[in-house]
Figure (cartoon, rainbow, N blue to C red):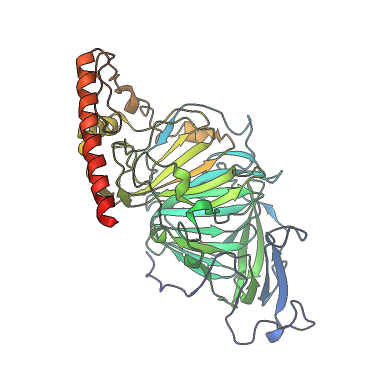
Amino acid sequence: MEKPSAEPEYLSGFGNHFESEALPGALTRGQNSPLKCPYSLYAEQISGTSFTAPRKLNQRSWLYRIKPSVTHEPFHARVPRHERLVSEFNQTTSSATPTQLRWKPVNIPDSGSSTDFIDGLYTVCGSGSSFIRHGYAIHMYAANKSMDGCALCNADGDFLIVPQKGRLSITTECGKLQVSPGEMVVLPQGFRFSVNLPDGPSRGYVAEIFGAHFQLPDLGPIGANGLAAARDFLVPTAWFEENYQPGYTIVQKFGGELFTAKQDFSPFNVVAWHGNYAPYKYDLGKFCPFNTVLCDHGDPSVNTVLTAPSDKPGVALLDFVIFPPRWSVAEHTFRPPYYHRNCMSEFMGLIYGVYEAKADGFLPGGASLHSCMTPHGPDTTTYEATIACGDNSEPFRIGGTLAFMFESYLIPRICPWALESPDLDKNYYQCWIGLRPHFSPHNGVEENGALTISVTGSLTMMKLMTEFSSCFVVLFSATSYALKKHD
């Protein structure tokens, strides 16, 4: 285990045009690529969108570095080949199934084997293709070793990483980020990065999107404030190393395959940079959730942290949604999430605690997948416990838990090792089998705490009408008195 590192310095904001320099005066002024840059640095642009993308969507940064990133030997296929990374989802690489799926937490490699972030990363499911620049992949990782003498560059898409156990100390070309469980980090397409494990073994979840970038969701009627605030997103400040490192390896993820190239210097040699295309992190504990304050259970989309939109308005290529600690106060309402069939597909993970809709079996570090139109909802234990409370439930705080969801309108295909995994819970379906019918046509119907009406008893109906009339008279008299007093 490495010594805990101090928290790096950050810039704050989302989508801002940032600038940072590790040495005073290292940034160029008045132009991006002068004949000679300060400190004789090389100017290099990294483009996250096409040159002609609309200005409000255009993303790029200028990096001022000791040596340009092109200074490396040719790429070759990595040996041994990584067998469990997929970016092309078809009948050859993956399978389709409408069955509800759940996985137990994956075991972290023991001390007898050394597994870094690259080798510990594996694909669970996904849709589309990195080659056609449309789709996504959902991965998980389990590692016990820091990346040493190498850096990873993802040419396929953006990584959104959610650590569940153990901090990640990530060095990027823009600087350093320290990411703890309860936080998330986005590493945009094309940036080179290295992952160290200051706490030792680590595991977590990764969403990868092809051909798009994450953005903050529109707030609509919520107004100007709420959910994830732009000011709470943190971007690294410039940091560099210039030492000679013969045999340093660049690992390029390209079309779901890994390639390697050698160079004699660290890629983290950027002395200054400016732009709006950079890695960033966010503390999920700063999320400002919204919830119903009277009745019914709100849709999970109200807890969206980031979204990667599709070309269809209001439809996401991938949403990142969280279920954080919050108050539950709805009256006359089944408070856990409702039973549901969804045109979207939902992959869920649990960072810590117990998820409110699953009393048993869904564990921190585990995952579940409910694909397009696959039924899902609270398990038997949760339903029966909720119904037993009746309408006597007081407001209570849902605390000590943090779950999340990757949601997409594209139907996922499942990788064979995920379906064959010993961690796959083959008895998952049984959590609903115990749900029994409560229907009885002979009982009265009670809705929202209103008076019970039995259509089989006319005397009962007359009594209720009399009681209602009396209440109305009292209410009317009180209102008239109040109005007269006001006049």
